[in-house]
Length: 272
Image 1 (tube, helix red, strand yellow):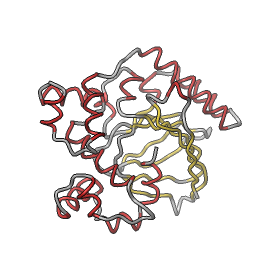
Image 2: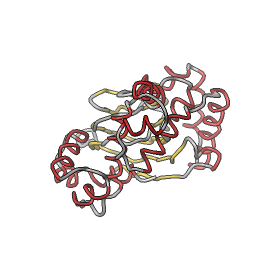
Image 3: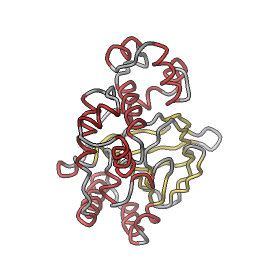
Image 4: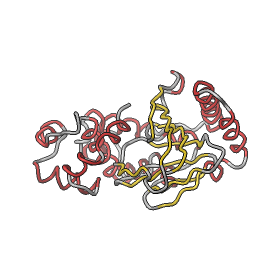
């Protein structure tokens, strides 16, 4: 069984880090942990705390994580499979944090998991080795926060103001504002807005709004149940048919199947 533990970041990193999640436990090879993860607005840096490589499958992509990797935005659901001894700590990042930390376009990280070594070079290997040798979770978190703080100071990248204003509008409207309305409110063209979003989070404004609204559906779940009437009245879906179509488009499943098989883990990862 895999156990998940959430840890809050230090105040000085809360602008980029939502939380840390420790994934720890064992799953036999003949019964791996498999779960369909729906897209959320968070991006992730993961560190393997085991000295042996951790093999997983993310969206049918075999990922052998020796030290760590970076996972960007996914506009649709994907399956995650874990087996063997698992000891991974994930840094759940806020939107555009990958761009801010690495000073690289968000679109380079969309739909894929990339090795930290490929992003930062061999110098990150020593940090990962040090994490594997630490004995307490507190020491691991402290070392990761030192690493992230160093990245921020070195990168000096800033998040586009138009993106931040657009993000605020999306959050305030729970993803209901149209792209045209956002463009008018931020005094920019829809084409420019698309370029800004692709640079910062790797998704178009329409994709990001859909993912954000869907993440609100997951966060609103209670005890693995959900009322589509709530989605219509509070999250801006026109009617039940539109809600169901959007749910299937993003998750690849109908709501009853999703809530029966994958709701609890997704709700845990959606909360922050």
